Length: 218
Image (cartoon, rainbow, N blue to C red):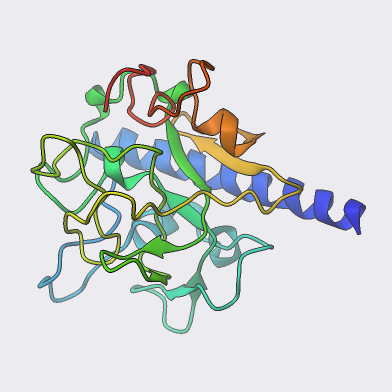
């Protein structure tokens, strides 16, 4: 059983690296990161997998082998196809609130900036869990675009500013580790405690998430 779980972890990391390369190509083409989803009201709402699919052209690459089967969403551009399991660092790279997608130049340290991780599903404003647009949150709410000076978690399905505490968690479902893909395309396995503590001082911070490799910034 352990050997099978390790094999799945390796497969997930390999697939995640393909998404990381797709993200790097997208950013090279557009000089911005994709939004996790178009805002509500747009006639055809593209999600981040829809925007990256042309660079990968493989639907299975968007699904983690260990992802819960009840937490999947449908592609907008591919009828009958679903994705699920990998969450996007939308709070810093591309949420649905102004200033929308992050410009390439604002992510100063892509090799130390989370792009995707395994996710437990989106945590909505009311605290319920759903598939959403498959996102993942940092340990502290981001101040980027939240309209709140203290920083708030945004609702991954609505693009709004949700209450503090409603984190969309990374999932350590691979032998106690999270598969983490960085904005430069490389990936590695990390524990939750490593992912949430950039400067390793025992206090959660957003250093791996904010694009600056700075544990003091939110």
